[in-house]
Image (cartoon, rainbow over all chains, first blue to last red; front, side):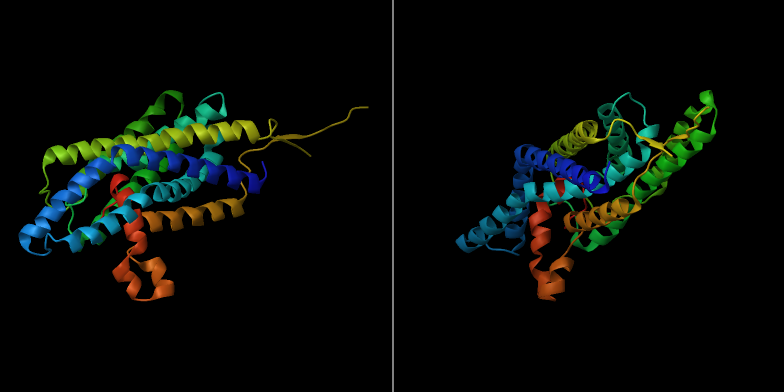
Length: 241
Length: 71
């Protein structure tokens, strides 16, 4: 496959999957964001930081519209970005992935990346709606979250490389090794320092919808890139010299 | 007379340049959606961008929904 075609299908797959992610979020996550921001506004009024005035609501409607309109656009940008990473990993690992066609291989990789780069980090540092989160700790929380994702992803690659050196029935040991290692990291890394003051029902429901949204992305990119690849890659990858 | 021909099954022949290009897109997109607090627009608008935070506000809802730390 030509480099340019490779880049184009990777970016298109990411953008489409991101569009789906943004649209799903718009439908199922936005109501919880509105609810959480409503609580945030009430807190502002009660603390006297803002006044419940028509001017406040005009300004609020202005930036809420801007934020909501960004949900789908940001989905496309994030999808293209994460899709680029997915494309790199897929291209490098395709020959080694299980499955007898590109769609199955791509879906299996999407599942592995969903688990190692999203679900496991999410269990440690779950998504939170607005009203939860102290602006003072955002840098620390970003470092913790990114570090955990990087440790999980890099160690998954490391244990996979190790599995290649092990004989048939010992390959599972690498999987167990990853499980033990990431569990240790899970317990060693510091907790999210912020206290949750929002109603827990709202927080849990928001998190559930958030997981559904991100899962829709990984499922979509697995299917879309696999289909593109199957359609456009040359059937014979054999060099004659 | 025999003709000999060597056949090499190609392993992953992923061009490095394509990987670098995709790597840059990955890092830039992730920063814009997940972490920008006015940094990108500050290249053009200066300090004011850190107050306005247009990109932060535009990506705010996705930031929360995708699990990035916010606020």
